[in-house]
Image 1 (cartoon, rainbow, N blue to C red):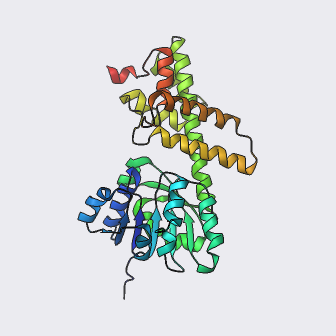
Image 2 (cartoon, rainbow, N blue to C red):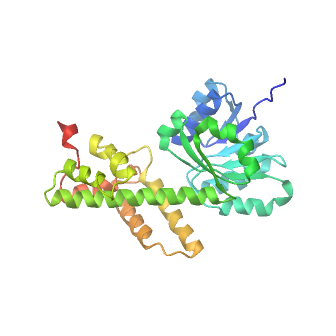
Image 3 (cartoon, one colour):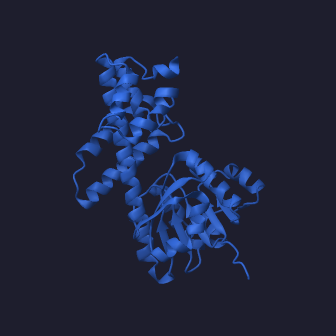
Length: 308
């Protein structure tokens, strides 16, 4: 029985997320062609067998599937539509997967302008941070045609947890789901920081307050797990910069505006995040709003069980 050779995967964007994702694609046996604005970001991958492409166009031309993992919609637009962009190299009927946290506009424009080329375009943003990218356990939320999702499932499974690769709807649905996940997580963070700061300032021991929250209907995965990064280690997660968190919050607000849904709470969370960015700098971690509240009450929120 003849085995079908795995598709050649082109990957553009070798930052904190893309570097781990590409290592896992190589480990799973996919031939890999890579491109990044920083050639040095590809050194390790080339040493492991990946090929370097000088431009996004060359990446697409040498690949069966081209993936983008980029910081903002503007970067996606430049990489796709620029003079040496993906569209200049991708063959008719080719496949482009955008795994960036973005909005539908760029991909929708490509679909409309190049409808005659038969391109397969999917949006597949991820959750799981750089740790999930490194260990191949990302959550992936895919928007696109069901037949394309199934055809590309082996590619997704090389980068993500097979149980958490979800086909969430048609084109654009992946972008929307990821923005809503981010928005709710950031809202959990701000609400939790505010509650912990008020309770501690009122004289309640931090451990007692958190245990009480966990035992109550107000419990959440954030209170039970995610906030421990700060409470146990003083780690505000610099692996994901607050400038990118603010970008994501802005995209979420833009999405709300585009569909005509008021987003008063989300807008307030965005303001808190932008205040933290202004105070601590663009490269501060995505959990730095907790530090805003710590500085306001003059107390670092740390669990006594860990300090002991």
